[in-house]
Image (cartoon, rainbow, N blue to C red; front, side):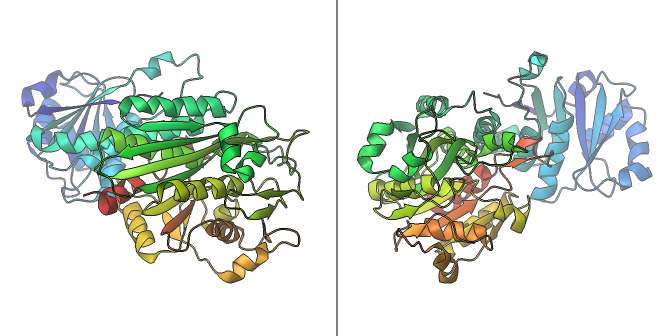
Length: 490
């Protein structure tokens, strides 16, 4: 798995600046006023820093953006990175500043002159997230697998160490989620996925893997039907974190389709290689569970993920088949490419039946329709509980992860009426993401607070974003960890 960059906190030592190798980072506010660290750096650079700050190049930088002064006189470093950043708390700008550091860090050590800043969480998070790179299958990039070292020089190191411990725990969960989503399907089979989740026992999670015989006994026939055409066995993995006595847990439910061909309703060849990311919901749930365990969260949370592969084969389910869910409802399969909801309906019902959770949140790369509606900036949030979804949206906003509430309604649900079964797995094309959410709501108990997060547009991106390289983003780990902290801990 990809390792985090090593974060260190050291106390102020102006003498140390002149001997630092690698890169030095300095923050300068819009006013251009230099603090004691910047003034020392400026003297060592014979006024070069001050000249840059007074230039038009500095004035054009947005807050959190950076510029490099390469191979400066008077220092051993390869570059001084100047970041425009005011002292006031601005989480978005601070994450951008951290991303500027992480994105330019290279292979050598980095010294960040953080001075009297008491809050470094957002800077550190941006730094860690942007420095991620998935290179496990690149034979020429062995050197990039060694985690770089990033040192923060601060005036009060004890005040920031505790905060950075949580940052590292959450970032580790995000890295875990990204690695899972980035893995090719011939590496991350359902069996390999389950094995990686079983390894989380080492950090205190209780992990149980249910095989096909157990799933058949439980009545998860909708989930099992999705994997009929695959050589890799379908599985359900249950992860439990008990950090708060005996109270009912929050349940996180993840769609884990390790590869989605569309089944008999075969997808077009163009872009099908991207369907390795169709287990993004399960990846996010796994990342959240890892983060909670690493930071010893004072909450009870259970993660349930359904791991399947959707392949065309002589045994694959067909359009027109009728399957019976664990709940007992019969489902007419109109389109085998609408398979994620068949996985989710069974594990959602299982989680409610077994754990009687306080609330339930499912995550899935469920529909292309949500991408049409919201693009790649926001996940779609559907809910039957105003208070719960309001708390989630606030947590997502705090963490800078885009989410937008979408509607539900009986008019949408009417399109799922079937001639031969209790319900169809798809309705018409209009409102496709909403109709998918309505299908799932059928499997939510009436008194169960529930959110469905359609993350098809945000789980993996075709271009680098502010906090991630091209590929998996780990979207949702930060927002859900924040929701647990704000609403379910204590």
